[in-house]
Every structure is written in structure tokens, then in C-alpha cells.
Length: 154
Image (cartoon, rainbow, N blue to C red; front, side, top):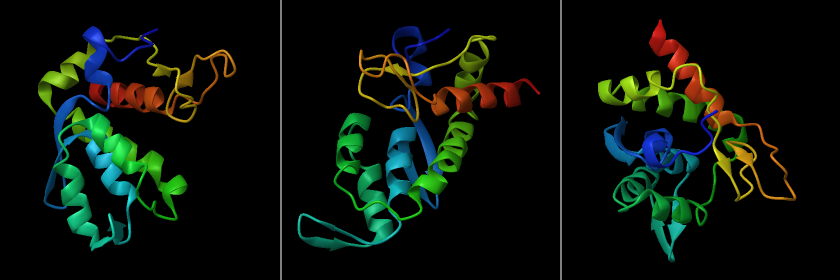
């Protein structure tokens, strides 16, 4: 099992730099794209009204994926987010691995189970390894990565 998306496996992380283009905006990582898709409506940021596309462009220009993740926690999330987030991530991961180098890296994982093990209680996308959670989680990111790997083989 590949249980950490660091070191030689860092390309599996949503923070890994790769261009994802959607509706004319280039996002520098899957994380940038994912956070941008959380917003459906206009936003008020620091007391200023920002339109949807301007907000998404602002997100695309944030310097690092970890800053984007933090910024995303301050945004008003679209009402249908829990319904659409899986498909949004699936699309983004498919786009990411259209890159020839990254697709060969993903294929090099062979038949290994891919799991984003974490300690920050992300039980939806990964598996939380902290003592209270004790290795529970849906591992949806790992499942998507393995699905895309299978699609690439065909």
C-alpha cells in the first residue's frame, strides 16, 4: 500500500504542481481547481463583493496549494457541494493525469492500493490515522486515483 503522498509519491498529492484549465482559467494544482469549484455564487471577501469568475481567478493566482486550502475555508461553499465534490475531484484527477509524465508515474504504482493516510481527520478523501479515528475513512481520493490508473491502462 502507498499510504503517504510525499517523497517519491508526492505526484499523487493534490498539492503537486500541474496545470488544470477550466473555463479559460489555469489552475496551478488540483487543489487550486478544487477550491475554486467550491464557490458557485459571488463572494464577499474582506468586505468586498467579488463575482464568481473573479473569485476563481483570484484562487488560481494564490501562490501555494496550502494557502489555497486555508483560503477555501473562508469561502461560502455552494449548496450542492456534498453532491458534486466527488465528480469534481474525479474530473480534476483525470485532467491531471493527461500529462504524459504524470500518467507514467501513476502507472508505475502498479497494483498498489493508494490511500491518503492523514492525521487531520480527513475521513472523506483519505484515511485518518490518529488514535481517536484509528484508521477510518472512505479514501475517496485513493479510489479515484486507482480508477484513473485503471482507465490509463486501457
